[in-house]
Image (tube, rainbow, N blue to C red; front, top):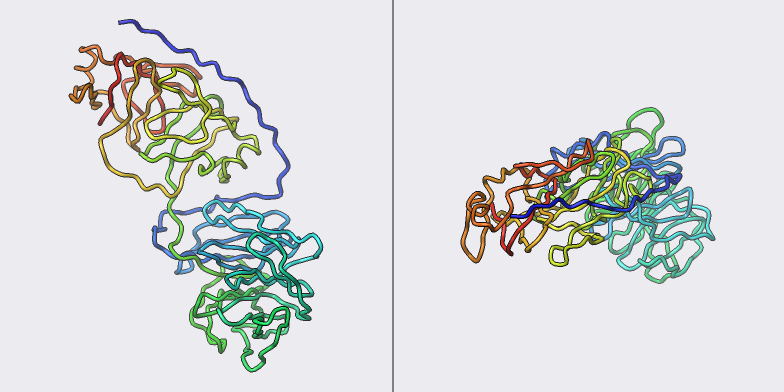
Length: 428
């Protein structure tokens, strides 16, 4: 049987490192106590000219936080179980990816100076500057109306627009005849504390957070009279707003580690995933794939292998049972979320010729435990080699020494070259 070694020739791609005002800090992250169906409290706070978004479980214990340089993130809103936040420094509204901390700009009104309150009535966002401004979900401005209020937070309860003002009063407004806004003073009430900032309505109760210097305040859930239903100690002082999302946050799954240089990687589970959904942890800080590329931590290019055409391909999706070349400019880790794996013995299909393969398992698997199915009949690895269906030699990649090596074990998260003399199927 003829044996030859494939030499990989891949162009070197370098990423420039840009200046960024956005940093997501995951050094305090603890996913171990988070279940798939747990509700998550989201809390905004600021220190000097920076902001943080904290995630807490429903007992008030810290899960993680994200840090944003030169942002003043204030009021929160939840739409379709997704979190939105307003920025007081620049009149922007962002959607927050609570899994990564990434901020997606929804709209930026360049004609205004700041945003504070943020509420959504099912069709439009309402944000307050000196006037009350209205925008649709695409960020297109629907209108503005005179509103001489100093708003520290706002909410929509399904019937009325509510504001928390600097005079320590929660006020009620009828906006059904927009742009006419009518105050309903008989509905007004005092919030749980004179330090309260931010306002959110969960369908039954209001939420707010205390903004106190140098001491920890509280997150409050309270009714239409201002009576406290629940309260939690804030994870840091100078809070602004709080809300919660249903269903919680899924536990990220470890994919693999990258070392500086070329890496021959794969997925350790039987579910495909796009590289845009991969989290890159570099230096204890987690980044989206695009931010990691922009930061110069890894190359954007993934190289797969077309088994039928026997040639390299560019790939944006990692498929289970396949393998990929990727280049990292520093040691880092790859993680993925929302992984729902199934249990079966299928690994991948081999085509006649060279194949880049992997075993979709979080445990290492010896080739002695691999089954080769040829024309509907299962063979042990040894029997398949003796019958001339596959070659016995498996080539892995040593990331430390940047060279090929023979191996008898498929390691989780790694890829391998196998030569097959016929089309067949690998199973466990």
